Image 1: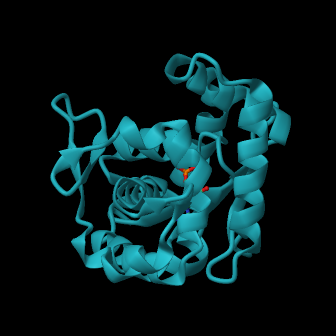
Image 2 (image 1 turned 180 degrees about the vertical axis):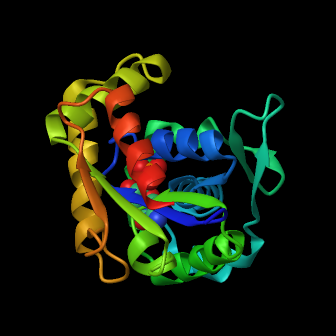
Length: 226
Ligand code: C5P
């Protein structure tokens, strides 16, 4: 199959977005990071509807149609970057204040409905690698191939901490681990589209695998399948 739909779901900081991107590059497919879409909506909510340390969910729901999300290739075509209402927010959405709020925004059913519709539209013609939490279960239950990526919480916290250290000098490993645990909990327990492994997904636990080893495994599976 030349234009498959490939789903990558799993826990935060397992590298699933990186593998999805590398795979898309290798085979000439398009990569969509759906976590970035939930993060962009969260950024909009923080900028416009944030009062007393909480997001005004009702105001956000009413104004969902004002949120326009696009992906555009960067100048050397190495990455698909996300734009929120025509502004490049690729780096901004990775900051810790967004990580702290994003799972609360992602559990709002109206937000999910709004984004899932766009995700299905982007991927409908195939040739796509999409990563998130509900791609193989909800967005594309008939995807041609599904991966579910996991790793131990300690390993994931370590990896995310190293990423964050460049951006936030004072953050601690403990804070990062707490945030991951909280997001996992909210993502797994929400009513709409909770994080769960699709029954037909290939499970990869990369706690003890390097990035290269994990990617090698993924490529083998893809080559065997298509
Ligand atoms: O993948 P990333 O960690 O950037 O995703 C941020 C958050 O967005 C997740 O913790 C989850 O709450 C939400 N998300 C989701 N469904 C997706 C992708 C992300 O609920 N398909």
